Image (cartoon, rainbow, N blue to C red; front, side, top):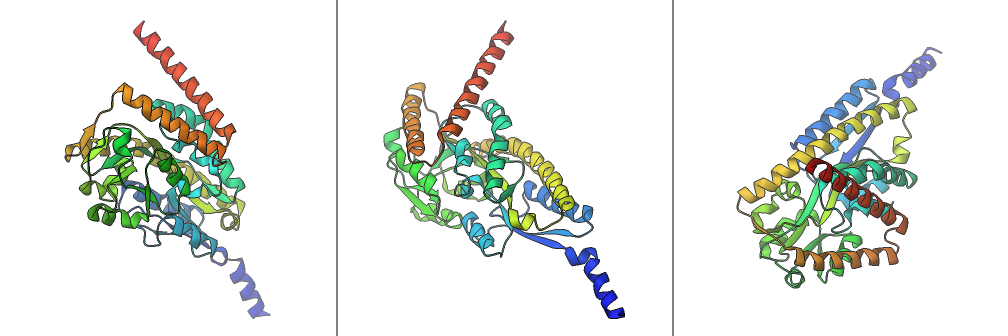
Length: 337
């Protein structure tokens, strides 16, 4: 009888119901956002009396974003901090922010995100992925080892796309470029050997992964808006109590709101750092941009026709962009008066 009571007491203890979420990211350890994430997971552990713990694998030690997904399917990992484009097979419309040349400035991004972020989070949730506040990575710019001053010259580059990301490959191909798929871990070597000579990434990514040391030019055109997110397998997340789920959501949403805001500042600083370190900025005039925008719209039309993105989401994006631009124009008129 005593043994039975002891076993029951052990099973009823908080330690018996402890859950460790193993999560991975390609981001190097020591970055400011990683420090915030670690502080957040520690706070969750304290607020749940040790019932919920996180083990973080940084620096790509568990592989790239797509490898993280594969390991989630077999239960080796429960989640990760990944580029949003990694999750298109769960909810294709999350790439709505990644459409080329849709955003002209960050004010438009803020206006649209305030109205569409929850749509993305809900879409992922229905597909079995729990996510938290979306975190800006920034505008991606074409960076290359040789100057690119026109669409014709762009079509001659050997551009990297993430291996396993058919959407990125399709967008690149729509500009007449032959994509070179590589794992993120192989990009630096690809630039060094000449296997690739161009990437389209936000400045903070180029700096964090040391790719900028191999690049010489940057086109001053915000090609696409990139964001990342922290995600967990929904089944694993729902295996913990509703009370603990609330703690995780509250802390993670707050942490990633802070990261989202910090990344905006870091992105500006990273752009300046690239220029200060000698990367030459190529300016495009309005006539050149007409050609780029026409090509971008053609590529977006192709994505809709191939059901890679829904017409509903595209129409919502266009509506909110129009509202943002009308609001911005009105504010400028008022301020000039």
